[in-house]
Image 1 (cartoon, rainbow, N blue to C red):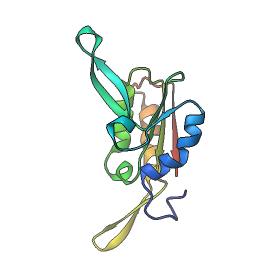
Image 2 (image 1 turned 135 degrees about the vertical axis):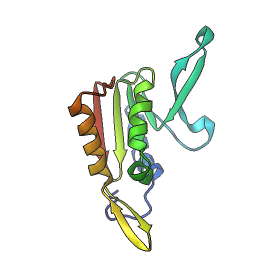
Image 3 (image 1 turned 60 degrees about the vertical axis):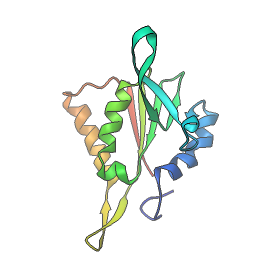
Image 4 (image 1 turned 60 degrees about the horizontal axis):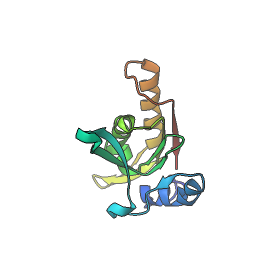
Length: 147
């Protein structure tokens, strides 16, 4: 699966390609768009320990605390990487973040095709966050992969 040569890839395509192997490794994986097929993880608890806030993610490994998010075009142009960093850092038990983004996202703008280097942009963002030390995230590690 190579976003630099294959048109029409979505995050669902990428997650589907990984799903069986992730499940073999002990991950819970989103299987569809219905509520029962989503993976919800708690963020905040209210009175009597009742979950008040939770977030949907693509996959989670309970024992290892690994959260997985796979993004497509929105990852390139919709600030999904920022959102994933912050939201996942709030998830109870999330020790690691695995973040997948397209290597290249192509779209039309003004009648011409634009190629956005999604993976490079996400890598630059992560490098800046971790190198600056100004934003302390609770992760023991972050893995970025491109597809």
